[in-house]
Image (cartoon, rainbow, N blue to C red; front, side, top):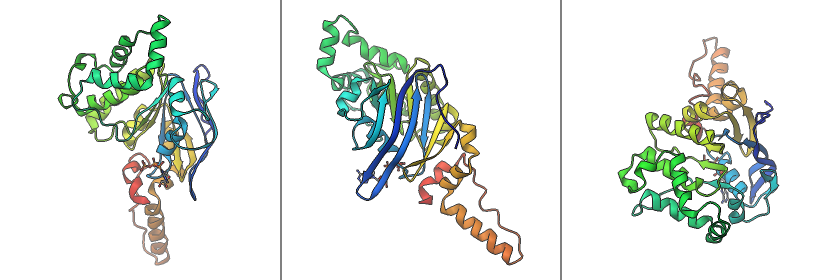
Length: 292
Ligand SMILES: Nc1ncnc2c1ncn2[C@@H]1O[C@H](COP(=O)(O)OP(=O)(O)OP(=O)(O)O)[C@@H](O)[C@H]1O
């Protein structure tokens, strides 16, 4: 496996060491070591059920875990989800619906309140970061200032997805964990969404990106980790990942085994092997769920 580390000059925002999660007899995460640096987009991919959402749950305090979670060098693995939010880490949820009756701005304001009224009051009393500016700043980062007073149904799907990201960015978020933020976007929208993620990362925010859209993930990520059955089976740059036999095997799963079996029996019978297994690692994400 490639030794995947952030570039030497990037500030380390997230580090997990031996992170494990067990649900009864199921090992959903096993000894996961992952890093995300400031300004980086790091992908976390794997077939359905590989443990991606569990990892985000564990890092953000929504799943009981063992091992270490450090944000900006600070151990947070025993802290409540609320306290973890206060160290500048936020997440999105797979079903991240917006409030339909609220404007974009109001959707973000609700998220500010979730960060904690006490925190906001403290900030105001300290004369730092006025609460009113927090929403505007998040809207600006994702390029949605012009639609701040619109309701979600007046936005494109891509813009709605960005509101979900902006909600996670309100406050002093430096590290954001995005769980399938581009689900449902078509190729064109997904490309534009990827451009926005790059813009967000360029502000110094570290992004952990989970998505089944392989073209988005391979295009936008600096580095990737691949999970299978709760373990990291590969890590590296998008190019390295695509060429990794373990990754191709994990995604193709039984389909590849079946194809190999066909080839072997065809050879034994003295006939040429079939060419059914021509799927590449690049588009294997679409088939990941079916191989289980
Ligand atoms: N709350 C839970 N209780 C019991 N088992 C769980 C729970 N959450 C997840 N699991 C199991 O843990 C494993 C990892 O699931 P997880 O949802 O993290 O995978 P995933 O990679 O995010 O999948 P997907 O791509 O389908 O979202 C699966 O076997 C799943 O059934």
